[in-house]
Length: 417
Ligand SMILES: N[C@@H](CCC(=O)N[C@@H](CS)C(=O)NCC(=O)O)C(=O)O
Image (cartoon, rainbow, N blue to C red; front, side):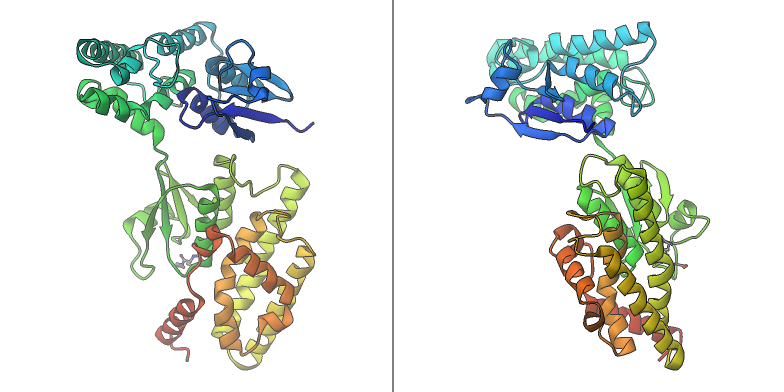
């Protein structure tokens, strides 16, 4: 049965953020419904009649309220991915204790109306009251620093329940510091360092602008809305980082996620889809559909790349054969597309991401081979244009004339006219 997961939430709510983080860690897809807390929806009043507050998770029609209880529920229902609470009863009780401490003592939301906690006072009070609040807030954070110790996360090597409970408040630190005119970092550097590590997913792409393989990765990252550092490689003078990160093939693209390298564009796109599950899923969860998508992406690598290279790099009969074969392969892909808008169906999928980068090379193939792909494969060109209407695609692909100029330089360098 398909899971129906709905979240009644409000974007700046730290309590809502807890639930969003837990759902993202578990890779659970859900419908986000923004509430107007000044004009609460009948659904919210019905689903949380006791507190009438967000967040409320509605799982297959059943409502769950109170953020920490929701996070615990999520952890129990979606057990396999990123466990948040330890299974050991004592460790579990300890995690619950600190999450409860955060809610009782250091609960920092300025929006929540029922609280008299220190952070709220830092933001809302003045004078002596504010000074006391600042002192108490720092004291609470120092206690949390003590609990963190020298572990990277409260949960140990990975984010756990206490991390999910506390980290949403990290994005409020700036507000507290500005209202209270003090520096949390000066007082509690460890908790600030923990916050920035928890927030940061360090993503680096070793890239080369005309590479269709690298474009696949750029598109996937854009579709998932992931910020990353782009490091352009000079393939004639490869960086020590590239040689270290891809010692087997020494090729771009390489994705470096929190220090760990992933190589081979199709494997990288799959990895991105696995890690950042929530947004724009690329591969179906159905094993057969998944296998089909992998088959066609592999076909692009085996057939299209091969014949396209020959169209550009050969002459005479060899080139004529390559043109014929390329067109034939593109027609096979047209057959697979059928009358769907995308290979992925209603939305861009894995095969679309694998194939569309080659569209910005079509002009080069056509110019080198003196033929028109559009005349032979109009459906495919219609598909490519549809893909290009998406910013995640068009912003990831270079101009086709620039690609052609690059190709001419390469041909000249290796002595092909
Ligand atoms: N199968 C690889 C192909 C990658 C590839 O061919 N990269 C080229 C640039 S387009 C490269 O790094 N070439 C450098 C070299 O061969 O030394 C993938 O999908 O990532």
